[in-house]
Length: 338
Image (tube, rainbow, N blue to C red; front, side):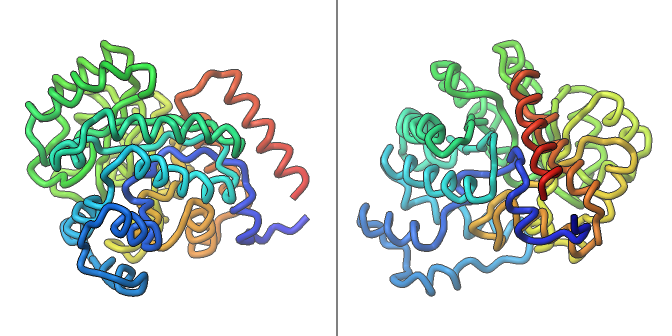
């Protein structure tokens, strides 16, 4: 049995994906197809032109490309096609369970009904079973929108409680701390939703935001969040309380040349449940298997470390203990035979 980590090994490794934005899986081919279908002028007419428009070097310049691209998403069928496109790629990466982020405010703010978004995405999560993937949805608040907008979005989401597993928080973190949405998180939790939130890397007040999430709001997972290593007390808290941290090496590499690999290794060594995911794979050049391979090769991770990252993804998933046990057995069987 080889101890070298190959691309085939990381791709075939059974895993859960807990940090993927469905809007961030919009590949140039589908963007162009939907633009033509819906007669939306996107300013590009070839796949190559769309590819060249995907240029950014920080969060703000990325979001300036990311949000306008969504104009091609107009109908329930568009959202279904978007999700199915991702799910087929996830199946090739042996993603067994996925919790997909979606941003309703990015669509309702441009006149698309919440129902259109959720119905298209949910239908795809049902059809994911044919691909042998268990797929669920996490609704994210956009943190650069108002509290009132978040409150209205949560009210709307309550009509679809059976289709939404949890709530999250994403978009531009600058001057938008987690506590801005304390009331929405409290209500969401009381309504039975699981809680997660982004703490993007190297932000102004990163540690303070992570502290708010862990100690006050009480999230079960932190998306990105690797700056937690700067505070040993919070690292201890995260390890003790089995908080999941979802790291995305390829998207990190756009803003940090070391893709936060050292931090991931440190968190692993401290017993924190950190795992690897793809974030916005159409924009950052790789799906989940590529992310595993990138961090494993750049930081010379051991086979055991890579397996632990996959194990952590299942252990911090919002599924039953019985389901976790089945997936973990699958992982053990794969490791024994590869």
